[in-house]
Image 1 (cartoon, rainbow, N blue to C red):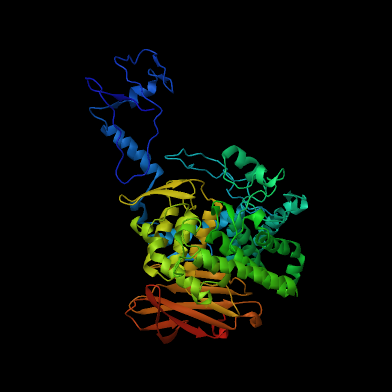
Image 2: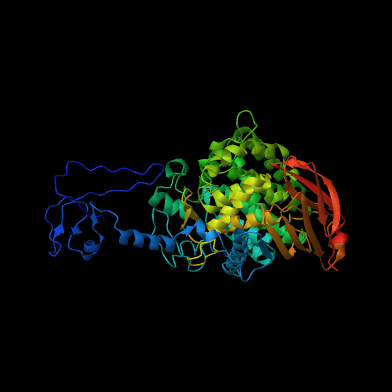
Length: 626
């Protein structure tokens, strides 16, 4: 309610003007124009969309006087409110070191100090919200929310999604838990999701009379909520109608195509981290087979799945009635992983079939999701806000783009400047949810070695997550509102929302640079923001049976020092080789003097992204902690 005291005279018109450059707009239900209102009398203004009690005591202190619309006491009061609720650039000038760091300690700048707290607090929170049975809560217990519309409101203990296991969110959380060495919790998360995936065949559900295979919906523990609740009550768009499919039209639930592929990637990475044991594949074969068979079924039954041109259809956020890169790429990678698991137990027929289905998806991706010249990705069918290829490929291949499909990486490099353009304009704050927006574009910049952009984006990520006057000052928010010109940030949405939290944590893994073990080779490739250092202690290498202690600093004066120690229970399980990458160095610099564990090397540099980098390869035995 807005009350304005007008000067004497006649009202001839009311004009409402917005502020240039702002997208928001007020919504008016109406107005009363009255003369001679006596504030002491309980006079009701009626007849409009809303009745107003003009004698409400609130108006005595909060009526705006047109002659002096912003008196000092109001400005001072607004300033107190803003200071309490928002974070300002001045808050980042001095951030103290975090008092109780975990395995990751960053230093070298105030934002680096914040990063230490962000990693420690959010990992502890992620473990606490993972139940012993593997249920990973999308909102943590008693999580507050700033809601999503306009200014708020702030709701304490909102528990917005506490009772939901979202497939996309939990897949990302599973991979984060797994990457940080919490393999048991990640495995339980896989088991919980897999059992809900089987809801459809276990309930003998059909679509147009044909059996529905197991698949991951948006919320596997609420498998039919989209088709039976959101479609009829919230008009969620769908092609699945009674007229087309008959009385069992709601039985599919919904197609969360990206969530399905990401859950497969999560299971595959957990299996690798457990040592690629054949016994694990045999024990989980029912789930492995069903998840891969769902993709085969979709491709073979386009009249039921709407698959076309070798692409899978989707009806949720990342593929809203569309065929997108974000939805199809993880299914392609998931099939590659599941084919490897099938081969591990001699399932040659399934391995062959799933590789064939993967090739079908790859062909569809190349044919329909790139621009006509094939050089860059089609921005209209990315799904979500940014090119998903580099950061999703890293879930399968590790952190070195040289190990990824070169044609796709070159396509991403060609798409990069267009993809980041608006983020640069907004002082390196990416729009959208913190995971899908800021964290994903940050991961791309890191992986593509765009060192300057990555430095700014990581710094902004720390500023987004650090809110010193608010509850849980290091917790990853779901989103932010930002005014770059004045350096004001405001949390928005579900605090600690699971997928946003997991994607932010992956950014700090990439910054630290200990890539998952691949083909017996350990690659350590820190991508530190300018001026930062990292100290990583006793960190379990993903897919390896050993641990790393690492100290690295950003290069200075053309030199760089990195210290690496390996430790394991069995020296026979150490990597065959350890490759350490140094950089970034300026493109004008062709050689560098570097030090690895006190030993000096003169190395030749090669360009990647906007900088030059160089490798040193050493036997694992030289790095064993004595």
